[in-house]
Length: 320
Image 1: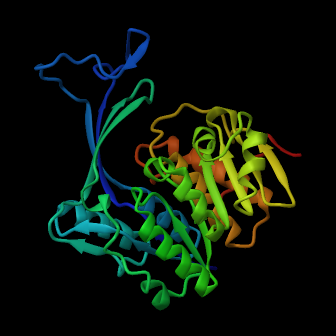
Image 2: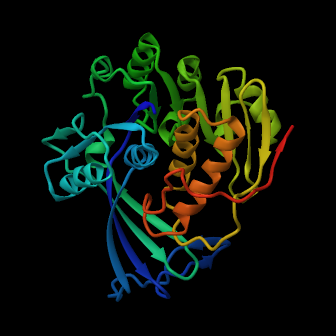
């Protein structure tokens, strides 16, 4: 098994679930979420308190696979922060590198979820997960990780560069799943891709980094920066290449989506969890798809995360 550090956000996810009042409506050709009048009082069917965030979700995947998972992220000493730490500890994730900030509350999302369609709108206050400059890359000297898995650092390229360089100096490999803030500055992002071993993005994100329209074009251009590239495309599946193999894959299973929150985290971390176990490129892609499918079938960003011991059925995947 591997020692894997997850660097990213930690949030408390508060779900407001209803079967009719939150149904999407169309106004002027745009989907508007929730048939709710301003000033009205709406009865919600269910409220659920969960824990999420890209760093937390990925760490849980690694721990459930039996890897030594370490989470690096910010919370506050408030009830939400305690919920995050307790969740990590229950899952067997090392939380000793969590930083507690004094002037910011723990990040939180309020997720308005229509139980009929699975559609949702997310209102997020990132709080302590808005900043990462307080982290010291020398923590990696103490941890000596095999892998560093990084989700969004909210565009903090200075911190990202410090951690990527330190990981390279220690001989650790890096998988990166950038967020919106990183993608807003493709120039800065591409300069750091030389330190990355695996890049995981969706199609629209890939098109913000390199030129290209088709998945094949985008993969070709990104492969000039990173040895292994995975580009997902929603219900269309995706494409992935590692320099010697290229696979075009579909979805693992056509199922009703209960909650899409955390699907991307489940895919990326599921892939790395298998690669770090020595699984093949193809096997890791299949598991990543299965892990993502399992997550969207349950409420919450990590309840459905698999352990890697589950039997998997065949899925559409073709070597190009």
